[in-house]
View 1 (cartoon, rainbow, N blue to C red):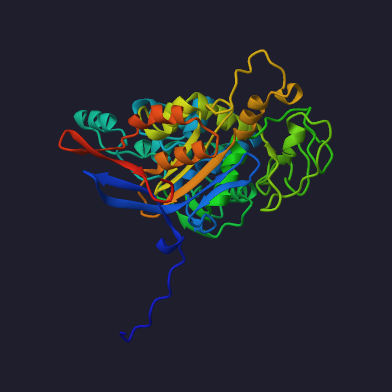
View 2 (cartoon, rainbow, N blue to C red):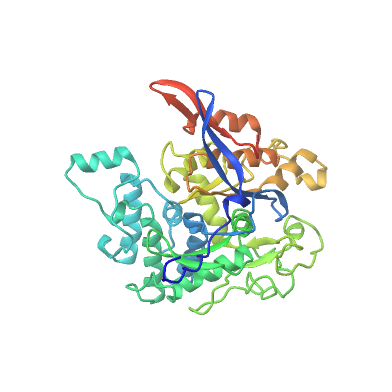
Length: 436
C-alpha cells in the first residue's frame, strides 16, 4: 500500500453479487453479454408480487423521478394564479423527449407562459435525441441548444412554477430552493421512504436515491390516483374542501413551507364500499391507500393521451403508452418504471360498456381487471444499459397477470431486440436465467 491513506468506499447501489441475470444478448447461438440487475413488481395496493435481486437497495432513479418532480411542479402551479398547463405541456414536464420540432414547440410555449427566453434554461446544450431532428438542424446550419436537451420541458415547467409563486428563478436548481424542497417532500411522501442520498442529475437538477420498491410504490400511487371529488371523504380526518389532515397525508395548503398537498383514502372505500376502513401511513405491513390528487390524475391521463410527448415516435416508452396503455418512464443508467392502467390489456379484462359496477354484479373478470390496473414494476440494470429494460418490465407485468402475453408479443418486434450479422438476423436480446 502507498503512503496515502486508502480512500473510503463510496456509497452506492447493490453489488453485482446481489443482482440476478435479467437479460442476455445472444449472437449466433452464443451469449456474448449478460445484463444483471434487480426488479420488483407491486400490486395496485402495494403488495410485493415478485422481487428479483435486491430491490430494497438504494438506486438513483434519474429520469424515473420526473413524474414526482412534475407532480410537485403541478401542485405549485396550482398554488399560483396563472394559467394551468394544458395536457401536452403537462406531459413535457415529465418527459425525456426526443427533441423533435413538436417537442421543442411545447417547451417554448411553457417558457412563454413564464415570460422567459430559452437562454434562461439551465439544462445543458444538447442535440436532439431524434436522429431525424438532429440531421435537420445540421442541414440548417444550427447548433445545439438547451431546448433540445431531453429534460428541457421539466426545466421550463419548473421556471413557470417559480414565476407564479414569486420564487427566485436564477437559483431554481439549488437543493434548498422552495421548489426543490417541495419536490424532495413529494418523493418522500409518495415512495414512503426517506431518501438515502442526494446527487446532481445530468440535467443539473437535484436527484435522490430511493429503493426500487419505494420507486414502484410512488409511481403506482400516481397512476392510480383519484381526482379530487366532494363525494370522497378522506379517512382519518374530517372532510375539508377536498382534503384532510391525517397520518397519511398533510392536506392541501399553500405557501412555500407546505409540501404535501394531497391525501390518501382507503382503496376499498374509494371504489364504492359503504364504510371506510381506517388507514394510516403506508409501510411494508400496511398496503398504501389510494392517493387523492387532481394533479396526479391529470398527469396520468395526459401521458396516456399524448404518448408521443413523453419520449418520441417509435421509441420504447411511447410505444408502451400508445399500444398497451402502460404508463412507462425510462431513466438513465438502466432504470425503468412501468404501471398498468384501466385501459391496459389485462387477461381478466372484459368489455364494461353499459355494465354496472362489477363489485355489485359479481363480474369476476372485471373485478380482476380493476385490481390489476396500477400493477407497477421498477427495475435497474446494473450496467446502466436500457436495451433490455422494456422487455424485462413487460415480461414481469405479464407474469403478474396485469398484461396479456399476446399484446406484449405483438409489440416486441418493434423494440429493437433483434441482433444482426450484416443485414441478417443472427440472434436476439432475450430474457436471462432469472426470468427464463
